[in-house]
Length: 436
Image (cartoon, rainbow, N blue to C red; front, top):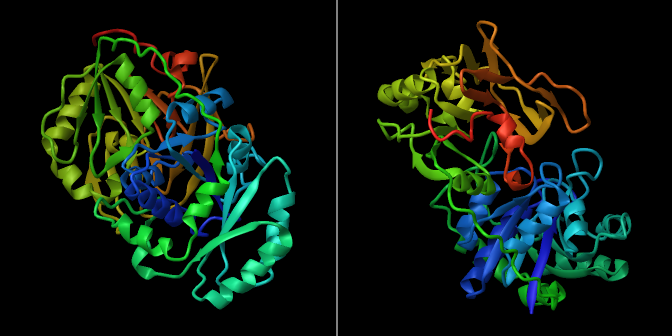
């Protein structure tokens, strides 16, 4: 028997990521094949998932992806245990439920395990559970785990509420400062040294994991989706990947691998740029590595020359910032960058910009997500392409710069569904050429 389920919560910061990581590592340590997924456009939680499960985590997003693509991805990465971590609150979507964890649970027919922060709550959890259980009958609330519960007596009150509502209690998680993951301004900290075994050990003592697998078990065996992988195309593709640049969607990279030979390089550590017909400067945390990025003048010069010579580039968020004249840190110190785009970006007056984006270019549609705190300033008129709207269809002023063969924007685009449309060709009209 296999098990598959979605971990959700009434709101963010309820503890669902910590619980997900603990379960992934605990079940992996049992010798089970565990496959993690993440609802929404998050590219940080997936890194933690991948490390905890020792298996690549996959994004599932019903705004950026078609329903068919979401289902195809879920079945493609079939495993003994499939765990999907939700995003925000269970029913929170970009437009009502659209793009929510609940929508994905319904689409994939997944039982939902609620995680509730019960630190200051006892029997009052009953109406909360009642609401989540009955709000949408298509959502199957299979069980609940309570976070921030330090005593068995506290848990007893919560169990009684569960019994009265008809939702199975599966245990609780006591507070433990040693298992918290520090946060950065874009989400959880990314740490290769984080000890996921500590979480697994902690939750194993008070959560009935065997019962969790039992109530989420399925005898329906869906064979993994198999496709005839095409022979790689002729392009040479260089992708920035290091401490500063690492916000990528796994399926995007898989598509690029179909277009040609992919090589990774570091704008921090390397001094030479790989031979490339396409350069992908992904987003990340360049603002945390400004001194070393600016100090690597050889790489900055190589990338500037590549852009000026007509090289094709996709630059997203942090990648776009790197292509600008400079980035200013929170203390007001400016660091020279590649200098290709006549813009400057700054963290000095940080302001959150967040939301899904729909981009129309030459009557073709691309989907993506914008999430940053930096601000930008254009110093001359720059050529822009496409029209950009938010999830509710309202125009937003997020620029998509098109200078020579460089396309740069704050938007993190998703093109992992490229096999079924020509949006990426519209995005980079010269992409199919095999040389610069």
